[in-house]
Image (cartoon, rainbow, N blue to C red; front, side, top):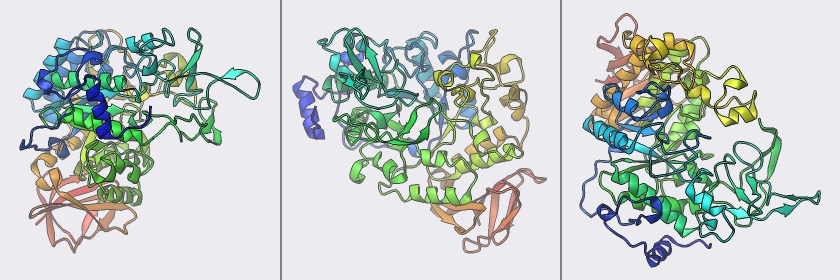
Length: 592
């Protein structure tokens, strides 16, 4: 289907009977029958942009807290830990998919977008969790898997039933192509992110279907207005259940080249034995921004200033900036996740300073969104640690994440220094990519192990016999119970920094300005709000350093110094002309 302008698209939808309505009047029906609301909120409504100064916390529900002893985390388990999250200082939780799913990709292969997987509980459990979170000032963000469904989804079952099925065009089907060897093969050389061809032959209808990810995750055809209608109905359904927004999965992969051109090959081979390829014709096509504007319009029709967060692993800040809205319109996503900063993967004051400055200067003037670990990424303790000073480096990374200007996103267990614990044998692997790519690719089980709450059996995660993934040996030392009793632990550092974000206006929502910009070892910046200035200095080297901020002021009261040292948390006043930093240490200080 030819691209339409945004106005033309909505006119087309209206002509199909998808009229503009008040969200409150929409029935809680399944997505295929939901009416799409595309109106903006009524004028004059005040918005506090809560997400600008919030701290987000990602929960992998299988691994957070098991409430019924079956070894799998669940919704009631999350509810039971809301007081912990409130006490820690969390404003919103992003929960990875809890929808009914065959579990090939642990929830990212969705069989039903408007239900709860019985493994995690019921819709009543979900509604109760949302209400309890709201009572504690915590918002709930759902994962919106926009690119693909499960092959067990009713939509795909219909689509593959026959070539003339009404839902055939809901997915991407193509005839094969005769190759140089004279044999019929896939339509082109496009590859799955998880290895081998992105095309799978369907014997029943004698065509190939396209899947950017696993074979069991066929891509939706976003050129089809009926697909958009159904998927926007999904947004409405969950907004009516009280969610505060969505994290949009794999958004850059929504569209493919209509000419089906081969992607260019690159040197070398990947962990699956395939030739390396540039995803030139399957990533970041311009139509993605049309969909993001439409998604924004749907959620903006609801009260509460709902937020959109995108998995936007863009190649540079210029491309990331487009996610806010093309041409600076800021009508797409409020918080595109910044993978550039997440993936520096070395302690480098020079590299971090460069990237933070670039994001701060983004032409959309958009709010940055920072993180260092998630469910697809090895934990930061392992990627940034040197093997000797890992605990101190974990605290340093906490300061980098929580004192810069932007919306920080934490990953469960980050606050206690949980480490990546890979399976030792292929027999122990759950994640399919670990089975496909072993031993070069061990999968993502290592960053998804159960939360480590205490020193008891199974680290307090479950009362059952066998957790779905093993409890790491490190849980005996790195757990909430033990670390909460140590004023200089990783947990105590996170908690104190989170409290500072709330108490200090400059850290909560002040401006950002890099200082001492020629320093190769120490990354320093100012946060300013009104008459208050806070200086942050992060020593990213293994040697003690001394820095000077004479141009900023004469003296400052230290709000937090790491490591704590003999003075503990007692107020310390320092000369800004001579600020001492321990190896991998940091100082946060309010200028007098």
